[in-house]
Amino acid sequence: MTGHRRSRVLVRLLSLAALSASLVASAVELQGLKGFDDIFGRYAPAGDCKRQPQVLVDASGMTFFVAGKTEKVTNPENALQFNGPDYQGPDLWFFPFRLKDGYSILMTFNQAGKKGVLAIEPQDEGYPGGPALSPRNKALVSGSPYAKCK
Image (tube, rainbow, N blue to C red; front, side):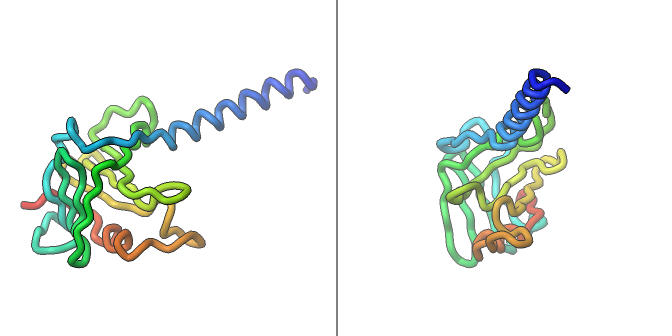
């Protein structure tokens, strides 16, 4: 392969890598959740509102009820293209808590196309060899999957 052609291939590969990274990292900070009315409601493990943790979603944002503490998030980030730019399904992805270099957990509403189901998974914490989940995030992940209260 000639030097010129090798350079073009390298440029293409770098461009594809940058595009892939930008698709995964494409998140937009919101001020409240107006316009996401379909996910409004109270979520609890398996939809049993006698159990905790719970997540309340409304136009003002998300309120987390964990171990007797309440925390309100009014500026979550919406991961717009988490499943690629052509995704047309009902799943919606949010990062409620930021880390210095990433996000602690990922919230997937309408998980696997099931309306009213919320999955909470570790994102940049809680993986083997990585930083541990905070107690709040560990409780939220352990309670998953959630469903709207019955």
